[in-house]
Image (cartoon, rainbow, N blue to C red; front, top):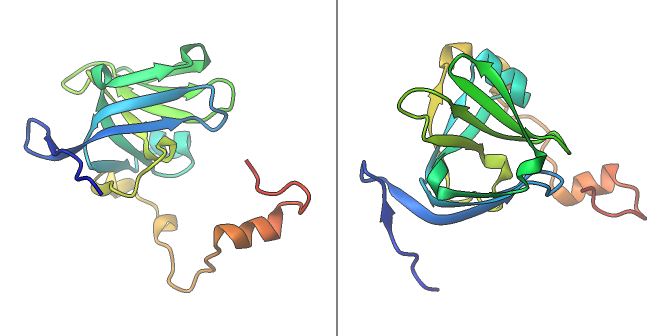
Length: 162
């Protein structure tokens, strides 16, 4: 297997070359270049309400992001200095973007939209004083595989849920 070339950001952190992703229905697709290997999680009240839990996103410079399906993207101004984008066809949350300040040149793309995330690592958390105990998964919880969930919930004639 060929070794992927090493890319470094201005802080010397390794970055992966390219990541692709899409919303749930596929109306919005994207290719992100120079993706850093670390992502963040935010526990603020707005991120929790917007994402249904903690928001987990990876920073991408807008100049390194190719997006298709712009007509399916709606933005919501969530504060005086930020906005959030979602697919207006399926409702998938797409990204958080600061509209002012030093990070206004990029977006925080939800890692759940990415096609491949095995090489990403949680590196920072924001608003940890807002973190809820619901995120602490107990050791004795039931854990089901994809096949077990499909067998339990999907009608046998329809197969895997989309």
